[in-house]
Image: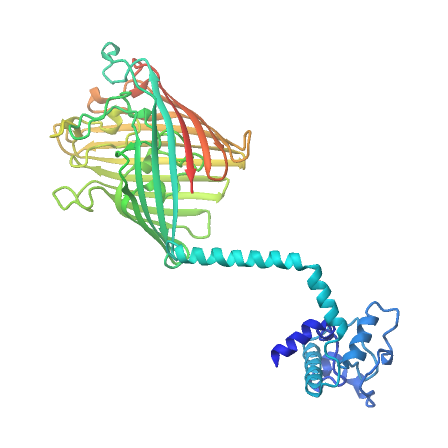
Length: 557
């Protein structure tokens, strides 16, 4: 029955339109107050009979724009009636009660026509019209049917081959053409006569990252990152017998932001889980490869990415966010206000149960940050970190940014592989970072940091050292083409300004200058040529300027 009624309604639009008019000769009395005042109805006790012609309405004229439509509804279907006083009130707003009454009247009339079969429900004219429409739009109907079939086929294919209902796979691939230039390899002995010539070749390298992101509640995220790379580190090399690396430039200040070489063997680069607690607290748990620059706002959005930001390691963000690497937890309290607060703890060698290792008995980095960001265009952060590095994990206070003395300010010993290893060291790190973007095409950011370290073991136990660093950056967006970024970064890498061991104090000042231009080819490919210049490498005026050029191409999918 319902199907029959629906077919009739489709073939006779006039019946549908009828429901939007006052439809019953006697509106239910419980709504009289909404239809007409009670006093008015009391004077109209002699209600008119069933309306059979539109001419019976005193307020409907042949000149009215809806006259013909109303005439067809009344005289063809007989389910439209006016008010008891013989008016239709066509300009009056329709109430929900009147709509229900009109709909009920028309449905009753349809049922009556079906039951008695006393009228031509579907006329020949209606069928002829439908046939003409079908013939006229046959091509469009066929195209639409084909599109629907194609969508259904693609949907079935996706459902059959999807990786997971809750997991997404995304990736980033970097191709890089790089080379270091200069006259001599840098050192820190203040004797340029014994510096070997800087002789490097152009290298073509890559880095591949595959991220598998899963969600179980829609608000959490579990990430597993697989990573393979073979990009050389333009630094002071390694003397390890198991993995020797040549002394390329003599300084870590020349490292690229995306370097690292594991022979292109895939490893788990990151493993973490993040979820909310309430509306303001976010919990981030790292199991492998945790870094604070990923967990906290580092206030350098234009250049923080290793694949799309600065080409150098130091130019990406303040070294204070490089404190710690491993497993731990980060909590961020960000209520609906400009102020946020974060605390975190990361431990190295966390899976080693031996002496001087583990989560709480080995190297660690604890951090706290207060952020103030009243808008997307301005932000400032105050950060403090407390670190402990023991001889098991080596000493590298600034994670290979800055001079050799800054990363290991106290005397070293040599391990069984021939590598220099520092004695246990604690340090306090203080940093201030800020970013401002007056417009979408212009951004300025920068940072400054101070650290003090104390030797906790070895022949220089109890000695102290102080380090300082700073940088500023400028980003010009959409210069030349939409989505592009022209960047300039200038600063001083970490430098030992004071040390109880005078021989391990940096006497001069190095400067870091970097220029790059990120050119997007499309939404998934970008090419970034860039050059890095280090003046007075290792904070030593006797060292020649070193240059590193690179052409980075980044693919995202």
